[in-house]
Length: 161
Image (cartoon, rainbow, N blue to C red; front, top):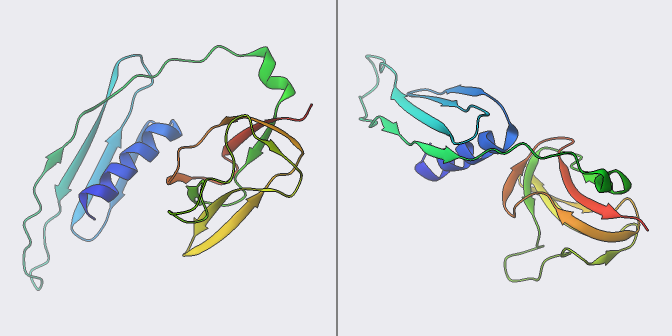
């Protein structure tokens, strides 16, 4: 597991609202803890597990990466009740563009029709087009480009009026 994968995992855990995640692989053990208080810190610990005698030992440095996470509870907004939330039908990586050299599918303020492609989600090397379930105006894009998404995670808010 390289540093970029660890950083992506930290971002994913911070966005998911989970308090603690432990990941153990062959020779690496990662623990990510978050707290939901204002000005809280998030610490990631990577530890080398004892290597088996038959395998050559590889030095994995212990990494501690404190990250400051500002979590402010959002006040419930009455206006959001009139919006329709488009959610992810699968687990994967969210992309706003069909390819790096193409324009984004949709922007905030764009009008979409039922069946228009809003984004793609990559799952197991397959790119799945996510289509709009309703016609309306995109009010908010809830996920950053190239971010991991979970099943049923909100992606877009659409104003159907």
